[in-house]
Image 1 (cartoon, one colour):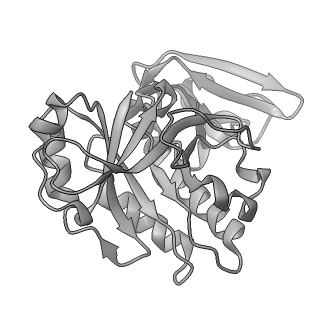
Image 2 (image 1 turned 180 degrees about the vertical axis):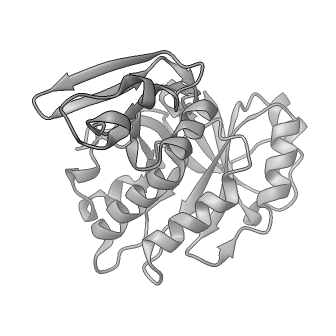
Length: 261
């Protein structure tokens, strides 16, 4: 999948021409730190989306504000937009506590959105990272001008290669970053909800061992549910659902909610 990534630095873009040039996917800069929102975010998104391009967003991580507030800023900037591509965390600036910031950002963003998030970084920067993020989708920058000609590293799921920063694409008046992506870059549109261990007793009053199924299932109207259990207790996994319904259940279930798979 041929792709570009853009920000305010690229100026005004004719995305109809971009699409006609064979570009399929566009990553758009959304935010940086806690207070910076890219001035072209909304314009770039609206025009790219209207042109029929697959769109996604990235956040530039900095060390000058808490990662939780940065995750909030990023989520608020993109939550009402079509996230066709998995969101990306741009990690290319080193500072004390970098890995801690990355892990805290990922945790907060997942809490807010339940979307998977990937890591964008340079091959030469990876020595500053470690395998605690090995399973995150990797979008790797290495300007060798040969898509996918990359050495292996500790990441287990490379989904993109930014192979040039001096590309030329119709509709963009200056050089732009060029990328190749695989299908791993696409955001999942369905999933299933999983609860925490459910409370015992009549309507969850813990008076006896056993789950009051009638009480629990009223929170899952029109959703097929499967009860699972082990020595610690009983939980529910739902049928496969649109992501919007999974997120609705997350709000409905409150402390009962565990995860979306």
